[in-house]
Image 1 (tube, rainbow, N blue to C red):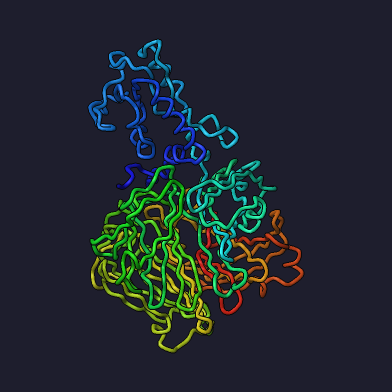
Image 2: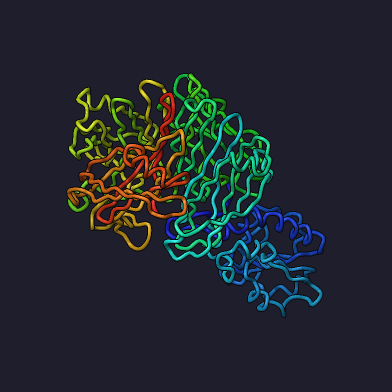
Length: 637
C-alpha cells in the first residue's frame, strides 16, 4: 500500500516530476485527459523517461484499453510496467493504436521522434495536457525546473476558537527574485477546495503573513480544519517554502498555544519522534493526504519504536483530506516516554500531532522524516581527533526558575539498531556543567532525562543554558550522523508545555565531512548565520534562545546582530549581542527593543539573526497568558 515513487533523494534532492503530477491544479486536468483516452479506443503508452509508473501511482490507468507500453531505452525493454512487458518503441506501428500517450512534459521533441511510427488516424497526447497555467510558473521554458514547483502544505485551522497564523518573508529576493506571489488553495477536512486565491508579495524582503481569521472573513467561510497549499511563483535560490506556524486560541489563550516549523514538502515512507501520551494526555495525529488519490484503508499505521507489530487505520482518507488519528485507539498501552513510528506510505508531508493535557491545555508539534537509506559509518567514531565532538544536537535549557526541560533521544533511521550517546549540559556562559552517559541505547529503549535531575540542584549561573546530545562510544555502538531528539518543556506553575525536535550537525569547524558543517547555499562549511524570527502580535511577546554550538573550539564569542524589520522589509533597529562559544542567549523581544522601536516596526514585523563569524542554532516561541508558551526551532536561508 506504499506509494512506489521517489519523492526525495538525499543525493539528487527533490523529484519535481512528483510535484508536477500531484499539484492540485494538475489533478483535474489529469482526470479529464484519462476520461478522454478512456473513450478513444486502444491506447499505447510511450514512456521515454521512465515517468509512467510514477504517474500510475496517483491515477488509475486500468480504465484504458492498452495497446502496449513502449520505451526508448534498450535497457528498459522487457521490464514490467502496469503489469505489461515494455516493448521497444520501434514496435509501435504493429500495435495499431487509436491514441498514444507520451509520458513526458515538454514532450514536443519526443512526439516528433515517433510521429512516423504512429498511424495517421491516431491522436498523440502527452503530459503537457496536465500543465498548470504558465502564470504559475517561474521558468515556463523548462516545466520540471524545481523552481516551478516551490510548493508546500501547512496545517490550517479556524474553528472552535482556535486559529492559525503562518509567517515567513520574501527570502527569495536575496537570490535575485523579482516579483514574487503566492498561489493558495485552502482544503477543508473532507479535502474540498473551499478557497483559491493569489497574493502578491509587496516588495523585496517583505514579510508574508497568512492569518486564518482574516482568510475566513475574506471568503465568508464556515469553520474549517484542513490544510493550506502554498505555491510560490517567482522563487529564486530555494525551491523550499519555509515558514513558522502559530496555533492559538482567542477566548482561552492560556489553554492553546503552539508553534511549528514548515511541513517539509517531501512525503516519506516513515516518520518517527511521535511521543506516546503521558498519563492524562490525549494525542491526535493529523493525517493530511497530500495527493489527488485516496489513501487506502490500512495504508497508515503506528507501531512502538523497535517493535514489529503495526496497528493500522482501517478507513480510507480522500484526496487532500485531513483526519485526526487517536493514538490510543491504535496503541492503547503506549505511554510516555515510549515513542512511536508512523507508517505513512509517502501519502503525507511531515504530519503534526496535537496533545491535550488533563487540564485541557493543547499544543501541536511535528514528527520527523525517518530515513531508510543510511548505513552505519565506522569513520565517525574515529574522527574525534579532527572534528572534536563531531555531530552534535543542541537544544535549549529554558530559564530554570520558570521551566522544566526534558530530552528524549529518538531513532530516526531504519538501520539505527543502537544509539551510543551522551548529553552535555552547558551554562549560558559556555561552561560545561555535567556530562551524562546514556550508554548504548537499544532501538526499543526510550529514555527521557530531565535537566533538573542531571544538574542535581546545582543550578546554572546564567539561569539558562543548553544541552548537547553527542555520540559516546565508551560502550561501543554504531553511528551514522543522523542523530535526533525530542525536547519537552513544562511551565512549572501553569502546567502548559511545548516540544520541539531536530537532528544533529557538525558545527563551527573549518574541516568538512560529508557535507558538514552544513551550508544553506554553496559548498560547506557553513560558518555564518541568517535565521528568521517571526514576531508575535498582541497580546503575545516573543522569546528567542540562540545557541552557539561548536564541535571544535571556535571564536571565543559571537558577533551576533538582531535586525528588526517592518513588514515591508525595511530595517528599523538593530542590537549586537555576544554569545560565548558553547554558550547561549535567552532574550525577549519586548525586553530587547524599546517601545518606540516596536511601534515603528508595527504589526507584521520580523527579525533576522545575522552573524558572519559563526553558525548559531536558534529556537523561538511565543509567551501568552496564564503560563502559556510555545517553542520550536528556527529556520535559516
